[in-house]
Length: 225
Image 1: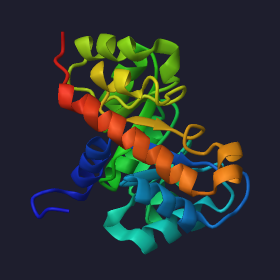
Image 2 (image 1 turned 135 degrees about the vertical axis):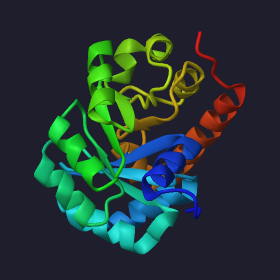
Image 3 (image 1 turned 90 degrees about the horizontal axis):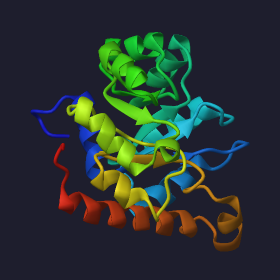
């Protein structure tokens, strides 16, 4: 982190620079460090652990302590203010939720932490921006499609969009070219069948593919129509 950059600005910058926010979503406690390492080795510099994962606060604290600023940790599906505060007290660097929850956004801003608030419609995007969201997570992203990002940027040119849900290697670049600053997802990075067959190296390879595809798309740039 540079001296002239706040912690909040650093987290946002890392998200944009990497272009992906891969998500660890498990049904039982596991070796979270190994999953995080696999994502880091692929080029991720921030990852998300969903609040529905057993042992999530322990996982956030462990990953944060192990990697420090090399790999930032966001908590996903944060639905209330108390949970948001617990995440930040356990070393979380970012709050992510699936919809506009003003109490959660307020807590994140109180602690000067970025919050990526879920939204879909133009009204919800505006509400998220008014409430103080750092980025707006368009969910489900695939429902609107890549060009929907352009539609939103036309009326909200300053908004940081991070679509999630239905994003894959075939369409990720289109979302970036159409105005998203990064993409997010869980299933596309946590395919249980592939992991059983190939091990955690499959996650590394998948993250690496996304980072490469998105880096190429970002070179083309985006101009608000």
